[in-house]
Length: 379
Image 1 (cartoon, helix red, strand yellow):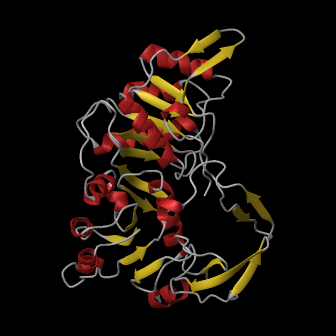
Image 2: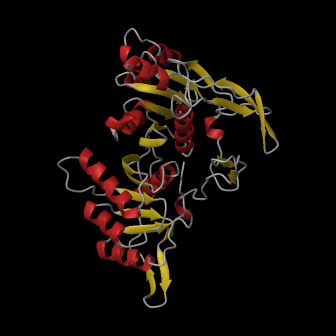
Image 3: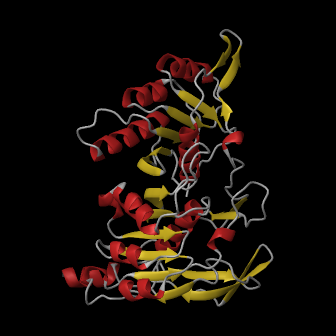
């Protein structure tokens, strides 16, 4: 009976979708039928624009397919991972699980006063991204913005990974990643070369395809893509507000240069976190990601609890920063940050109670900056 159950519910469903479809005047050609959609009983196919050339996903190279190819979730993880690492001009890595980053890391450009160092191997950022949440990283999708070398490949093969994607791979790295006789746990690993990954749109105003959501009755919602206008620390504004009863309030403590780099890093990661989204980061790596919560302070507390679980024995997360994809409706989120040792916050601003959050920041000696834009992601 168990065998019959598995055969009925967990076998691949064959796609019956056509070879070409037209949406909003664009013709899409089928690239392949997928292993399945979100679940095994849902058929799915992958299409690319007929007239496209050199696009990262439409023309990606599947070097190693693994067992039965890719699923819809694999593509979703590839997309969200690429949308994180595209923001960094030095090696960066995102480890994705169910369309959320379990961890992300980037080699950040040193502050002007710091001694510059040579770029590190992608191995370093991979280890930091993986170990940000090693339990969740198990069986995840790993996306790089830099060529994968042999040292990185060897590290990848020390734990279970489902998909590895990068702009390119060194020949020796491909040999290691395909050596399932030595690394039996990753016999079915999938390897993807994503050409021109760094050409993906980043900033508001750049040409980009719209997002399309299909409702249950076939109706469509067409929206502009989620991009950001926050290109540098100069686009971050010290939190302030004018309140009819409390007057003008301004956060007194400005973020340091190191905090600004981490605030930008956490904001770029948060663009691909399911709302309500909160990212705690320090030194270019996520310490914890709070995602999918129905209220803001729950997302903050979730992220803090996850970070504390990782750093058992540490009472605080002193010197870390936090990004929130929407404004704080009350001061409770700032209070939670202060109690945890978080020293800087980036959030959109715009709440009628911004004055409460600003007062809390000044009481606790926390920096807070506004982006003037929200980055909700309801994927």
